[in-house]
Image 1 (spheres, rainbow over the protein chains, first blue to last red):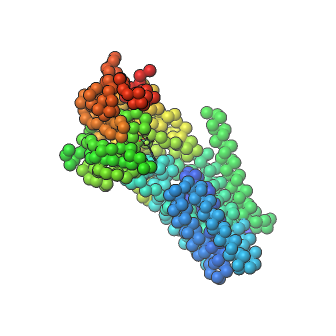
Image 2: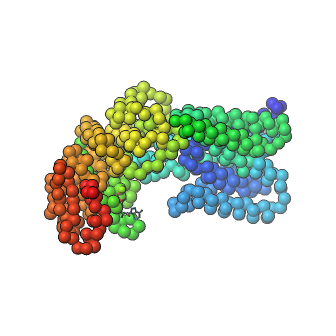
Image 3: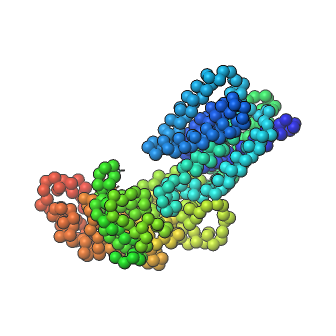
Length: 264
Length: 273
Ligand SMILES: Nc1ncnc2c1ncn2[C@@H]1O[C@H](COP(=O)(O)OP(=O)(O)O)[C@@H](O)[C@H]1O
Ligand SMILES: [Mg+2]
């Protein structure tokens, strides 16, 4: 399980888990789960383009994620975030379908992008993920308190910032960075489960925001490490284990809040 | 109006969705003054407060804070409607802490000084009993107290509260008003508090801004809450009646349509059953 060819997988998975758990805390607090789904899935055509051109998939993913952030923030001026995310997703997937039909068959790499692939992660990919992780975490640390205040209330945040400017664009950028880098490992379809499951589970176990964030990171690590081990042992798809274990986190948190609600 | 007024609103006009909501609103507040913003539902109280915060653009006129246009220092704000998510892991204490440092960038370690400050504020608003509970699970009145603490903890020079008494019973209203009155004097903060009923504020207010039909009259309560002044604001005759220490504004001998407008919403400044 810790053979050299798995080393890259463990490294990348660990970084993906830490960033996913931390960013996921804000994704859940801001009710942005759908945007966290639309951004990576809408970015996967970018990876297809990149692999077609023979460049690092991360570039394509990052590029399409960036376009997704701009599209969603612009569309959001007149629409709710859910609608804006859906519009972007539809557009990006349409482009993806077109690219696929033009480029002919590469079903294998497409399968990996959608469902995740832990083997054959290159050194360049590890470095790319490390870079994006550092960037996402730095941005998150910089904006942690304003983002938390804005999750409480946009009006309170705007009054405190001294202007009616929201952090939505910066936040979506963080989500885009952290989901794009996770796509090759976890898969575009299930990345957002890692953002939603551990974070929503964590907040049922503590009333303190920063503890909930920390717990979310720990749960996320547990999910990803277990998923990787199970993948190695069973040869099943890693995306399945990530999705299923994330759902377990969510259900556990849900049960606990329901019980706490009934008990008080 | 002096250049050092905490707030000066000069001929402010606001249009929303192509409709003029506020016309030529003019008034000023000195540091430490307590001002009631009175008007019936839909008269434009929230609009005025949001224009002062810079959330809404002015169609004409200008608004200065501490003598400066468009560069507000910290403004304390308690919005009218705020839906707090019960699933958000945030205690009442955390909400007050965010009032202190929620706009700051970067991370910080827990600090004793900050904790003492937050504790003091929680006690001041009578929220120390539920400081450790999740904000989203508190009652409306409890949340209101915590939000007041959130707004006050940075000691802003201007505090805007949008119908903060709407959720409170009579006793809590009186407590909150007395508290705001005391803290505004202590910190030298000007307070602008909106309400549809002026009665809980009678003893506290230094000034009043009375909104009707998109226009405003402002001044000291005894100058504004008068039959002639309010009649001319409404554009038809209203009587200001004082009974049992309460003030009631009632329409009399108005044209049918105008009368209806008042009758539909009899609670202009006082609850008249
Ligand atoms: N976004 C908007 N577009 C158009 N009209 C609006 C908008 N927001 C408020 N209004 C109108 O402005 C008027 C004043 O509203 P508001 O300031 O909320 O009143 P109040 O707070 O005194 O109850 C109301 O008639 C309301 O219908
Ligand atoms: Mg209002």
